Length: 262
Image (cartoon, rainbow, N blue to C red; front, side, top):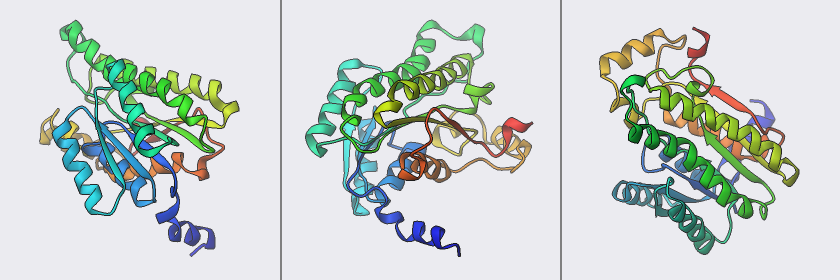
């Protein structure tokens, strides 16, 4: 085994020791996997979700594994709740080093059938929520020696959504634009801002949106012929949040089983 790789594996449990992370949309799926991955590497993790019951169960699960985890139920589309969330992180953990903007919603509605209320829900959750969290995080990240923002976009942001509607595609494209702009604004303050662009991932949200037969058909059409796993997304997010990615900013990293090649 390469000595550098061996060293990385041996120190995986301490990579984020002393650092504080906030993960939105962390009650299940990719967000929960990200919180688990960061906590396993020594981070203190503030977990957010709008579903307070599911969030409490997720945090209890992490605490049983020995993690220092904090539940902060809040709706990322509401400015006052976002401000309260960051105030709670500061009050309980005293700092913030890593922000993972994962909260999102998916709707498969065709454009001509999208009600204005549904358009607002999808744009507000996926894009406005990311903006509000970034805005509140910046003053805290300035105090960190390694401030990191990782925004969850999608292959939809670069091409078109596999199963989501026009509002989802538009929102995820907006996340990429926001990511690039913040990277330019914040680079001189040693705060990196990057985006992860997952393809079709095996999550509760995906399985609640389309039928199992459709999922199987999509999976077989990809070069790797399967859906991605939440833990695989969490590994990429952890890399971007780490010191190993200190010279990466303004990037959008694909993790999609090759579906953009077809």
